[in-house]
Image (cartoon, rainbow, N blue to C red; front, side, top):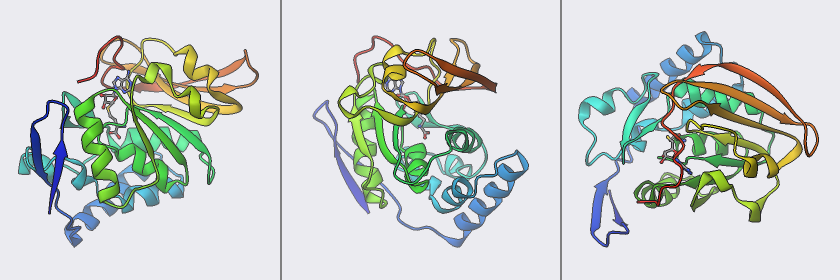
Length: 239
Ligand code: SAH
């Protein structure tokens, strides 16, 4: 099956998405879930989402090497094009679990990438708003997620530092790229009682921070260990 993409540079790009979800991949997903359990992930909705979502389809299969697809269910971050990565399954599971999402909650995601985390949030019952800064990834994911059956997310091409004031307030905010600081606009768009999870740090390694908005001006802050993310880009025109 081919999906036709019109990218902004006006060239038409074709890529192939395999719709098959073979027993092999189901078995690999079950093993991945066992690995995540041994690493401490407990939330049954998160584990069920990872067992269900065909992560091997999130790679652009026209450019991904077969060797890369073989690793689709290893607990690793992998390249997805445009210099970006699909987050490590453990990281996706960890951030989602800490947000403790309830059915129907409004969740703002910063850094859509290929949409894997978006799919996990949808499976966890969230109403998802997701922002991506890179146009090529945004265009691809906007076609791809509905193609594999995830129609519910509102995907926006824009700057994650600014959030989405027009859809605020949000119950939860998840940032999936390393930020040098906590953007004030995102704090402002969180509901009182709401949670934000964001990796903070400018180098290769960031500290995972979980914030609870206690009042308009007060936040409880917990740090939850070191993780590795690509940077949350500043002052960059998309492309
Ligand atoms: N959520 C993805 C992770 C993608 S990696 C997953 O499930 O795998 C982080 C993403 O953040 C990249 O796609 C990158 O292009 C995007 N990004 C970087 N800076 C951004 C910004 N300022 N606003 C929105 N997205 C940004």
